[in-house]
Length: 415
Image (tube, rainbow, N blue to C red; front, top):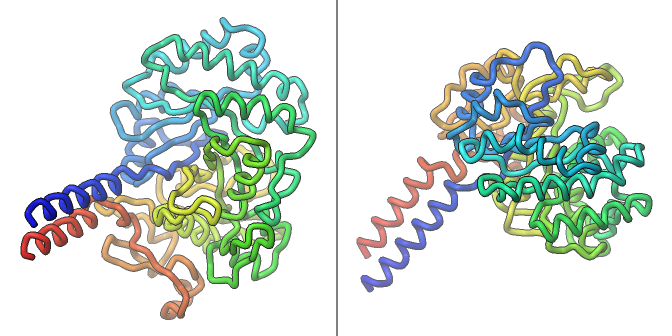
C-alpha cells in the first residue's frame, strides 16, 4: 500500500510539473510603428503574462537582450530581401548567424530562425528557388557553434500554399508550389524543424460573413461541420485549417513534420465595410483560442496535444498601410494598456488596465468568465446551456495545480 501511495504521488508530481511547463502560446511582435515602448518595458509586460514565446520579424538586438535569463523563447526572422545572398553565399549565412544569434545564446533562448515570410507564394521566383539553399546555409552556420546548434531553421507560409482546404481531409498543396515545398519539407524533416503556417479564421469569415460562420470561427456554440472524408466533426475553423495543413503534409509524404501556427488573430477595429472587426469578436476569438490551447484537446486529426501557436499581435502597428484592420490586431496599445483581455495575464498580475476595454467585466484567478459567447457578457445575462467558461490564466498555473496536488496527496495519505 505504501509503495502504491508513493507511485501515485510521483505520478501526480509529474502531472503538476508538466502543467507548469506548458508552453504552446506565443505572440508576434511586429514593429511597423513609431510609438513602441522600450524593449525593457516590453520584456516586463511579457513576463506579467503567461506568454512563453515571442516571434520577431527580424532580429532586434534590444529585444533579444531584454529577454535574456527569462523563460521566454524567441523566433527570429530573416527578411525576404536577405534570402538571395544567404542562398548564394555560405559566408553571408555565417555572418548573419554571427551578428544576430551567436552573441545572444545561450543567455537568450532562441528556438527558431525563420528564413523569409511567406516567400514561396510571394510572386518572386527567385525567393522560391533560393529559399531552400538559404535555409541549408544558415543551418550549417548555426551548427558550427555549440551554443547555437539546437536552434531550428524554418520558414513561414501563408494558407495560400494550399490548393484545397475544405473539408480538412482534402487538404492539399497547390501544384505550383509543390516542387519548392517538397525540398523545404525534406529539409524540415531531416532537421527536426517545424512547418510554420499562418491560418486566419478571420479571413475565412470575411469571405463568408454569415452568423453561423462567425460562430464557427469564434469557437462559439454551433452544430459543427462533418468532414465526409474523415468522418470527423469540426466545431471551430482554427482546428479545420490546422488539420487541412496536416492532411496536405501527410499527402505529400511528410507525416512526421510538426506544425507550428506562426500567426493567427482577429482585428478589434476596421473600416465600415470590414465585417466582424469588433472588440467583442476579437476578444472572443483570442480568448477562446487561448482556452482551447490550454485544454490540450488538440484537433480532430491530432487529439490530445495543442499546436504551438503565435497570436498576432502584441501591439498595434500604426504605420502599416491598408485598411484600418491592419493597424488593429494588437492585444495591447503602445502605452501597454489592453485593447481587450484575452485571458493571458498571470494570476498575480494587476488587471486594472482592462477597465477601459471591457467595462463592467473583471477577471481574476477565481472568476469563471464566459468566453464562448461574448454577447452574454455584453448583455450581462447568465450563460446559456452549452456555453463554456474557463479560469483565465489559471489552467495549469502553479497555484491551481499546487492546490490540486496537495489535496490529492493528503487524501492518498489518509486512505
